[in-house]
Length: 151
Image (cartoon, rainbow, N blue to C red; front, side):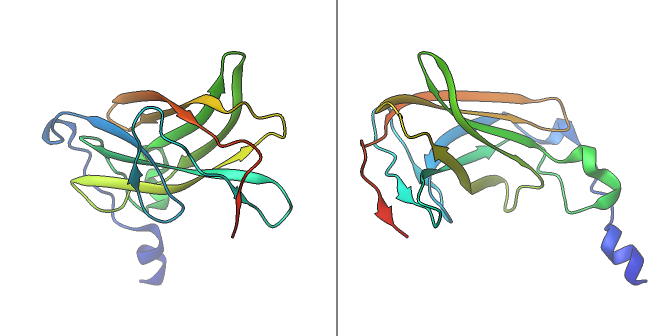
């Protein structure tokens, strides 16, 4: 009985009932806050002396997956990146179920900043679900130079 509860019951993969997919970019360590092009992503100091920003997203029309050891391939995969003209500066990934619904929010994507970080960058997110939906969104944001709050 305990073993079955750990494995979970498979969630039915019903891709036709999802509706049109959408993706909105945001920021936040624990809660989604929408971003608009040109908005600042305020850096924070980490405990080891580095700086990071918190990426977040809001999406709907994707298969959210579930906590289920038998269906690991049915959870969405998410890639969040900060990009410069020269390419990728930093990234974070998440592979797991999305909570909520029918609109799902995910916060806490930690993007560690390099020391020579440019201030004008692109924030990009890619979401792929078990139904084969691939959502990609990118916007220009500003990372304030050499400034961070202590958390």
